[in-house]
Image (tube, rainbow over all chains, first blue to last red; front, side, top):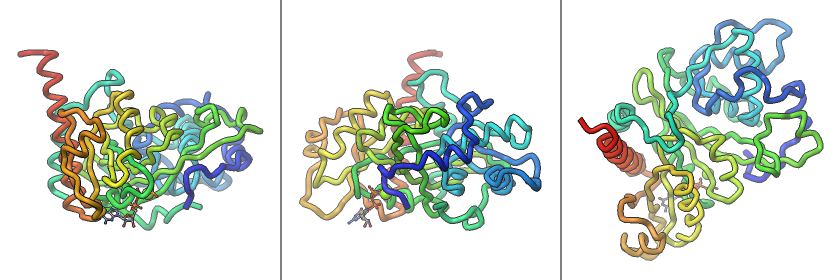
Length: 120
Length: 203
Ligand SMILES: Nc1nc2c(ncn2[C@@H]2O[C@H](COP(=O)(O)OP(=O)(O)OP(=O)(O)O)[C@@H](O)[C@H]2O)c(=O)[nH]1
Ligand SMILES: [Mg+2]
């Protein structure tokens, strides 16, 4: 689809989020690979992007997968997820965070990755 | 605009609880998407992040009205490692403005693979500099496009690559070869990580 450098139309993004800003509860805490799970079904009258997220997240789905499915920038998806989280309609399984910026990954996690990769 | 719908790819298990990230970074046409596709459980998906010219992510949309924004596209695949852990593999461009988004998108990444084409090694200098500056551990994988052969020493020298950073050869089209690249990265991370914890809390 897009090559890097395509200019996004801000009007479309503004419409999707209703112009809301980063103050949306919890929006910053969504990592690209935070797994999102629906806690309720879409209801009539709901904004279509919210409804789509609830449908897709019947199974755990990463934030970045949602962005790809919805065709929206990751930051816009974060705002939509913040709305749904505030309403208790989703739960989020966040990656375990390293303590400091330069912290190396936990050897136990790396062992899981080695075993998992050898089996593919 | 959206890539294939969610129906087109198998869902994760309901027990999936932890997402991990590895980034494959490199110049145009170096084989990033090919490598992601070779090992992924799903057909690679494409997505994007939008930022203002100032390098800020577009999350304050009211402030974006009237400002020029730029979009960076990247693709990704997925490997379910076990019932709980899912590894996401990102193919990301190495060009300059992409690095404004690195912290925003790829903080917390396990590590990176710098994919290089030996016919144009200079394309990867910038990516290597940025990863070093960010303190992100990485290895270099040279993708064989059938150009003139270079010895590992020649590649290492051209990249000014320290001896402790692994350099491997690969064919990104091959699942086995791409898997070996990821294993080389994870072995490197494991060595760094155990060396670190041994020096921090000696038993
Ligand atoms: N001979 C050879 N060709 C390869 C190899 N890896 C990738 N290619 C080919 O190189 C071309 C570019 O590969 P892509 O995977 O699209 O490269 P990319 O880095 O994702 O490219 P951009 O996203 O456009 O920057 C494709 O035609 C691939 O089939 C390789 O190991 N050997
Ligand atoms: Mg590509």
